[in-house]
Image 1 (cartoon, rainbow, N blue to C red):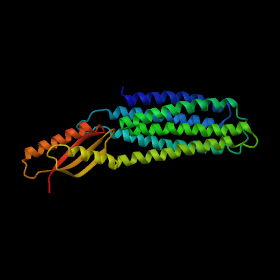
Image 2: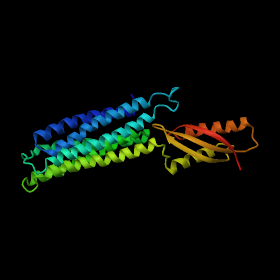
Image 3: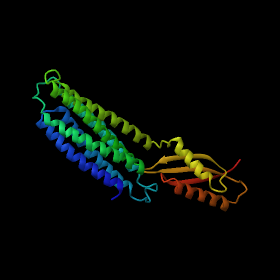
Image 4: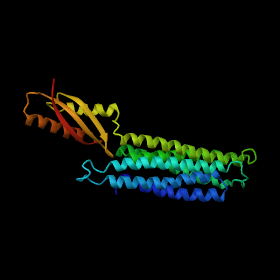
Amino acid sequence: MSTGQRVAVAGMLVSGILALIKVSAGLAGHSTAVFADGLESTSDVFASGLVLLGLTIAAKPADKEHPYGHGRVEILTGLLIGLALTAGGALISYVSIERVGRTQPSVAGYVVWPLVLSLAAKSVLAAVKFRYARKLQSDSLKADAWNDAMDSLSAVTALIAVGLALYDPLRFRDADGYGGFIVGLMVVLVGVRVSRDTALQLMDTMPDERHMRQIREVASTVPGALGVEKCYARKTGLRYHVDLHLEVDPNLTVRQSHEIAHQVRLRVIERLDWVADVLVHVEPAP
């Protein structure tokens, strides 16, 4: 099992335990905000499961039908996570706002502790996932990390709502319901952001200028490489595929030009671990 898969499994276990605790505490303690936060953690189990599935399929080697590998599945799972978060957040907000104005039993004081536990656990989990998402260049793991980060913020929101309801049950009678509504809105915002970022990857959006400059600089270190006319890159999973137009001396033989292009390909792949492969097209230098 790869590092990304182990992180996804750990996320599923933590989110599953927290979801069970918060949903049970929310129902027993009559807290809409805690119950809503529990539903959000339940969606986290689904999200981490998608991450695990995406990383597993993306790890499959290239074949005849998929010469670029199966990495796009990993990006696709990130998009599905974003859509699921958006729908889940909207449902949480709807359920919470429906309870506003209704006569509800008083919120029990012990519902605070599941939120404190969730805040601590999700903060650690988000930090770990962000770290490995950057290391592995994983969009789905990054989407899951944002999900956990929002969980921490939603736990704080639920804590404030529950605290107000416990402090003055008459004056802040609907604070708990509004807290659940805000939690849902936070989840929707994260879902929209994750969906947007992953959709851009599926549309072959180029990496930032710093990464493109790195490709040009590494290619230019090969003897005989006189310049880079064009350079494109697109993400096909955890890493990028690069198309590069290399300028060489027009008086070189085809064999000599090919050898320079081959060395450029090897050096870019060796120096830049986020590059999966490079297709080099040779051009005569002006």
